[in-house]
Image 1 (cartoon, helix red, strand yellow):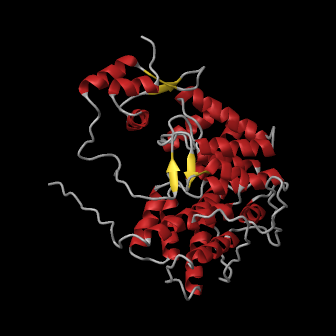
Image 2 (cartoon, rainbow, N blue to C red):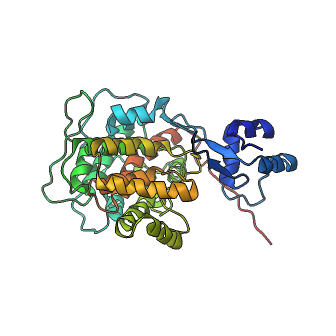
Image 3 (cartoon, rainbow, N blue to C red):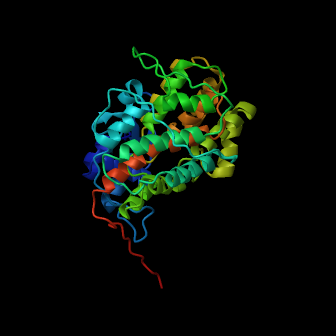
Length: 397
């Protein structure tokens, strides 16, 4: 029998196509990529066996907690992401991170590009950027006498200052000059978050296209529905914690190697590939992590579209870069071995290596970008009934 398409499987099982891919992510079905059409194919015998025994039921101890929280911020599809109804991919090409943050916070895509001013919090003699970001939030909270003001009018202004403060806390060369951000036909922008981050993180030649790619990364990572860190931020907001505490809740959760720290592992994979070749690097990653960091995503069985947008931006800015050539070799090797596509963590690592940024650059960009989303979810949660998250524990005797 011929392999089945996802639509054919959905018809046979009587479910939506999205549910078919959910079965794949749960391990109830296996799929592979058709080399010609690049779409998923399924074994008819396996599909028939699943149809006869009925839809996969959740066990009494499911691998994930599955519940719904209403939100007007971000919608995720198989091939797209939108912020308040606007394509995140189009915004990554045409809008600044500041404009997109304003859209998430207020519902309005600000036509200007304001320069956010950092709060005066003093210097920080900390070696790790992860610790610098957290300390910047703590010090910013201590310096804000109105931190308990949770009104909609006050929060966007405070949020912009907080993100600027976090950006200034990132370790960088002394006396660095902010890079200009060039967006299409618009006049070059000075003082953007993307330009400030570039000046602190990148040691390579100032390339306008890579500064624009950094802005695209910030836009693409600004929010992603209810990821683990965002849920933590909303739980904090439900207790009416101030926005600084909401961001700290997000930072604590995103610090894990399976969330915001995944780009650091992908960066290491690329470093190994450059030194010992893709196959040996993949083998080492599997030995250390039992998976290949930067590849696969449960929400995107056909590949993370955010990664494609960011990789296209890096490729346009630095065509033929040795870092890109090496990354393409790694991606091809993993595609052949495991039928997995690159995700946004891999794209972040490619951006960092192409721009000669440090190993933790992706983690920094991720955290600063997602701060916009955490605050947006906090603003939304402040309008809900307080203390609405109260799980129950099931004891096993």
